[in-house]
Image 1 (cartoon, protein in one colour):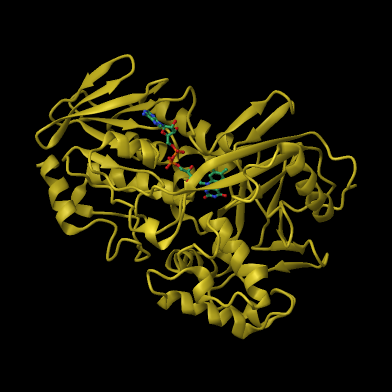
Image 2 (cartoon, helix red, strand yellow):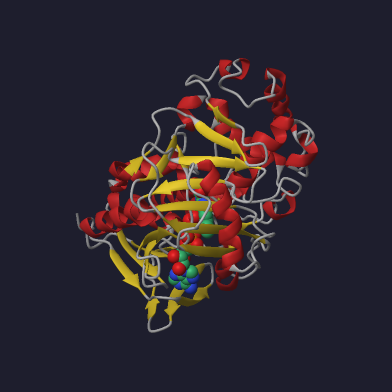
Length: 451
Ligand SMILES: Cc1cc2nc3c(=O)[nH]c(=O)nc-3n(C[C@H](O)[C@H](O)[C@H](O)COP(=O)(O)OP(=O)(O)OC[C@H]3O[C@@H](n4cnc5c(N)ncnc54)[C@H](O)[C@@H]3O)c2cc1C
């Protein structure tokens, strides 16, 4: 469906998931959409590529979705990517303790009443129901509190459940991670029962699920997608963005044209004057081992007391993820492969020697550091310029830097362009920018663009 000629044009800068989500929503509503992406491909920090040395496709990093990630699933429904995801039928999370070799499965029941915490076969060994109830303290946590100050680090449940979940979800060590942000995650997942926690994974790769279907859908809507288009400058005139200056061309904006800037935080801060953004980042290390998984192997295994944290089964690959990976980021790849493979072999019952060929991918600035101080630096989607909105995982969504957060921010920016009076769709009371995702004053300011 092509947009009507009089339709206002929306320029979306950045084709990561935030930009793609905004583009999908706007193109489906009949807007004329142009996506400008600096790289030769879309997907940003969530994509797959062919690794020549390994001889197979790998993801830049393992990404896990949960069935309760409503914006991400909405996005996949809109793009057609939903057909490419798979996962266990139930919310079952296999764990192994690399030190004791003990295995267990965390298995929350489907409904919101968590009777599973009373059943030793469904919960973490050596934990009691009261240990889980104690986590409700997170709900009342002071905005400046960290996970390690609110939950008791000396309890076995802390090391065997809360710490691995918090580190994976917030990509931040528990001594620095915001307790309030962790609560937001728990409330939207475990707090809603097993049905919301069912893990979902791309069957082939991130690009095949999150990127390629979106690009195909955008093209059928008549959207223009420009690769190799790096935005250098935004030129402002009074209260509006007047011109987009790219490396090789400039685009002057018409009176009704809008811009959604969906670039990473540091780039946005360079382009938009006086924009406050998180300025500390946290690394993620992945190691992809070229090998086939044993028959019936689980989709993933969580490791505690090891070097690896989460191990994912992929086509032709077993893949390790370590979040908040400061301790590993400067180690040489062969050393990392050795310690990670030890955990993979243990978790998937494979020979410890020889380790298969591997590729280590280090993302030094994978996400912003989810500390209480950094959360204060997250901006809302509305800017001082009436036709400029922001999207990206660093926006104050109430969620950490995740697929779900990035997509929610993209949907919200799109919605604010289409109908600012409806305000944000993404804040569900889980704000790190209380009381809502954007303030009324910001909404009012943005409304003037439409009037
Ligand atoms: C290794 C790793 C593992 C992760 N694991 C998970 C996980 O398990 N679960 C989860 O939910 N999330 C995970 N995440 C986080 C998730 O990938 C990000 O939150 C999300 O992809 C961010 O999307 P975005 O659109 O906000 O930003 P980006 O993906 O960074 O997209 C921004 C885009 O803007 C483009 N751009 C930059 N500058 C310009 C310019 N000047 N002009 C034009 N274009 C420009 C970039 O090329 C990029 O394509 C992980 C991230 C990493 C790195």
